[in-house]
Image 1 (cartoon, rainbow, N blue to C red):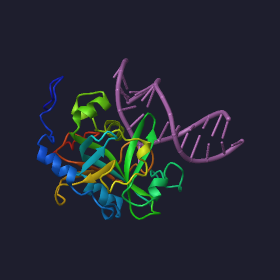
Image 2: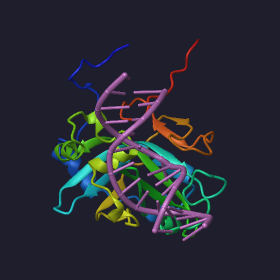
Image 3: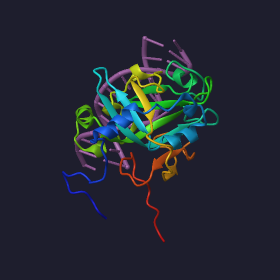
Image 4: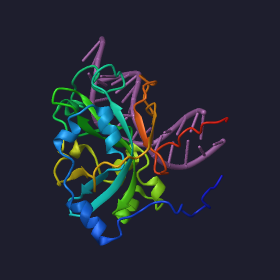
Amino acid sequence: MNRAPKGRFPAQGSTLEDPSDLRDVLTAAPLPTAFYDRDPRIVAQELLGCMLCRRLSHGKVLVVRITETEAYLAEGDTANHAHKGMTRRNRSMFGPPGRAYVYAIHTHHCLNLVTEPEGTASAVLIRAAEPLHGLEEMYRNRRTRNPLLVATGPGRLCQAMQIDKSLDGAEVTRRERLWVCRLSAPENLRFAITPRIGVTSAQELPLRFVLLETDFVSRKLKVRRGR
DNA sequence: CGTAAGATTCACT
DNA sequence: GTGAATCTTACGA
């Protein structure tokens, strides 16, 4: 088993050091409302590999590549914050698709993207991402210089990208404070489907989607043994 | 108004 | 693996 030497980082990972690549990302059209106005399981899968972009108040833009998502269903999903109806916390999930639902948990925040039509409370939790641009800013926010620890977890991602409740309800279909884009037509990326992490109910539902062939995930996939 | 729980993370054993 | 940090929300009295 290969293991990175202590104090060094794996060679894996890409950046947007090439100015033209960065320009392509920053000028790409955000995914439109129609993208989000679908079943959260489909949206969760198709978000894998997409770029999540955050413009800070002073203008600097942070970019990460989404590697791990979870779907929270409007029907039959007791792990969904909205499964017992609307509350002050979850009201964004009842709003139109293509907006953020941000909530606080212990000492952290988590980012969801709202799916399906207004009145249908479903969303996709962004669980992990690979940092691509604005590394120094994100290192500072996370108090680490290990890229594998920057955004591999929903709380870490929000801390790295300065996402908190002030972004709850924000539109992610415009290039304003937060948006998602992709550089080309959807690629056929391979991913695994597993139960969701951390939920205390509906634990069996396979609603977590994890990009394969990346180390930028919140939990290592269980290795299938035997054979 | 008191209390309990939580879609997490980190340090430590 | 276990426990603590630390804060917001939800809910019942």
